[in-house]
Length: 255
Image (cartoon, rainbow, N blue to C red; front, side, top):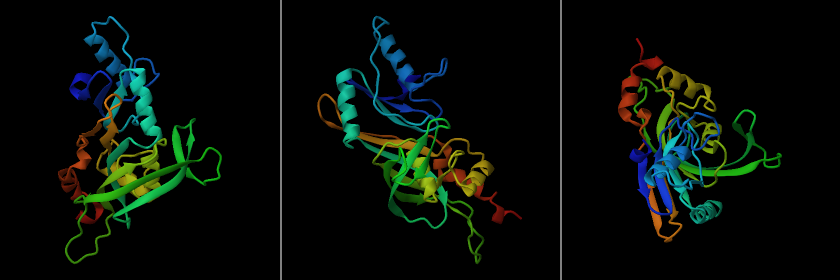
C-alpha cells in the first residue's frame, strides 16, 4: 500500500519510499508504478470526485529502492523541476560495491551515451554524438566482512564495501555505469557489473541491485523551507551479517 510508504505530504508535494522492483512511471498496461499508485491514493482521499495531479519531477530505476518526491500541482512541479535543473536538489545514495584497489573517496567525471534500443548507457568520449557529462562523488563508509583469509596468508579476495554516493547529474543508469567503469561494480547489477561482481552476486544469490536513494534534500516549492528526508536500505546485502554468513562459502575458505 502506497499509504504505508509515505514519508511526508501536504498540499504541494508527496514524498514516498519506492520499493525495489516497482517503476517510477510506466506506460505498460497492467504494470504497477509509483505515479499511478500515488494518483490512486490521492483519488481515494477525494472520494474519486476529481482526477488528481501527480507531477513526476525525477525518477529512480525500477530495480532501485529509495526516496521520490511527486508534485501535487503544476506550480510545485515547475519549481521542483527548476531545482533539479540548477542542481539545488541534493541526491545521495548508498551502494554495495565490489572491486580491487579502489580509493577511499573520489569524484568521477565521465561522458555517457544512452542507447534507447537496449535501455543501456555507456562511457563515451566527450566529442561523441549525444554524449552527456556525468559527475558523482563517492566515499567508502564501511567494509563488509567478506572472505577473510586464514591467518598468515595473503587475502586475495575482492573488496566488498558500502559506498556513499552524491549524484550531481541525472543521467540514465549513471551510478551503475560510472561505478562499474571505475572498477567498483554494484553487487546485484547483472547489466553493468564486471565478471567478479557478477560471480559473487550469483554465488550469494543476490538478485536485487544494491543501490538505495537514501537521502533527498530540496526546498519546499511553496514555503522555500529546506527539507531533508532520509531512509535506510531494506536490501539484505547492506547488512554485515549477510556477508558474515556468506564469507564461509568463498573459494579460499572452502576445504
